[in-house]
Length: 463
Length: 75
Image (cartoon, rainbow over all chains, first blue to last red; front, top):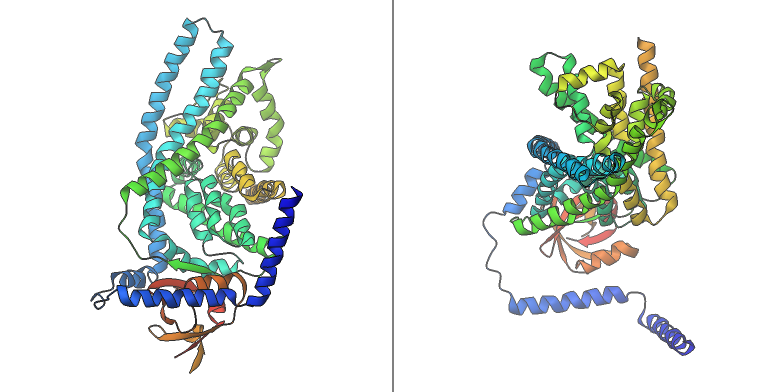
């Protein structure tokens, strides 16, 4: 032991002495020599027979990063991806849900047949299984559409151009242009977005990107925002316009998220994460033909299945807790009813109610189960429920005292609140710091409380 | 004539004279082949003016103006 550490010390000492002898420009001379030699080799071995007549890459770059078209193309691409994801996921999500709930019926019958008591069947089938089924049917189809499209853009080489276009805005916030890519990834899943922050070299700028990724609406939250935009905002307009109004509302919420990301990045980089903006160094690789096999593998195996697996691990206990809350009675009320009446004053203060708040607390593991939990609570049911008919849903919400303000506050709370359990765990793994993990939850929560309370207060004044 | 890299016009080519920068950026620039004498061509600006894209040894790299200012070139 001692001997080996002596050897190591001696070796380090030799290295130090050699370094002094070689001078500080060793790396310069090495790089110079390597490139000199490489140039000699390529001069002998490589023959260039004139450039191609048209440089397609340069042509594409002149359009994709042009002053007039650069930004419109990016915004159009983003809207197209979101539209494809949302529209395309509808039917497969419905089919998956139908299948899972058909299976649930059979599981229930099977459990009864082997003599399982009602509470065990309820806990396992209506609690754990239902929670899992919900998360998979809501989350899998949009991710299986979003991630391949995103990976496709990454594979052909468009994404580095997005960073190139946006870096100036991020520099203003003391952040890095590559954060735009981690934000895009966050639209699919914040946990994946946080992991992708590894592409940012500077630790300070990486931390900014990690802490603000939560403000990108993820696949677990899109359905909630779309639902509220359709049922509450669009419904107050002429039916002919409702589709456009709903889409515009969703885009508006998304853009608020982007604006909050910039503002919070600026805030972080001028307070707790103060520091010089590091260097921005980005290679714009040549465009290339997409490799479908590689896209398929990266998007479905590395991203979709990985994220889904982790979501399931956290959703199963959430399903169990929701079932227990709805089925354990203390006195003449379920625990859920107690929790709701206790949370109601806080919910009202934030422009919402106790049910919404409870749904957000039990849905910390996964945002997908918020709406089913709310419907269960409003109907005083004993299991998570979904209503297919939008009209019925609107009536249910109205009967429970919902107003336009309730919908707005819930959308804002959904956008801001705090990262889900999977993302929080990923943040801990990526930063290795309990302090930053707590900060990543507290900062959005404080923001959500301030914003929702202000909107609620404003609407009380206006009425 | 000696210039800073940030002063090149689109389509103009210069040759690297000296890197007035230290640390990680210097390492990365050297690793990319920005050794003295290397030709470097300004290709385009980002839509909001900064960063700027250059072609070096067939590769396209983007640098912020504040960093390009620290690279001395001759034309």
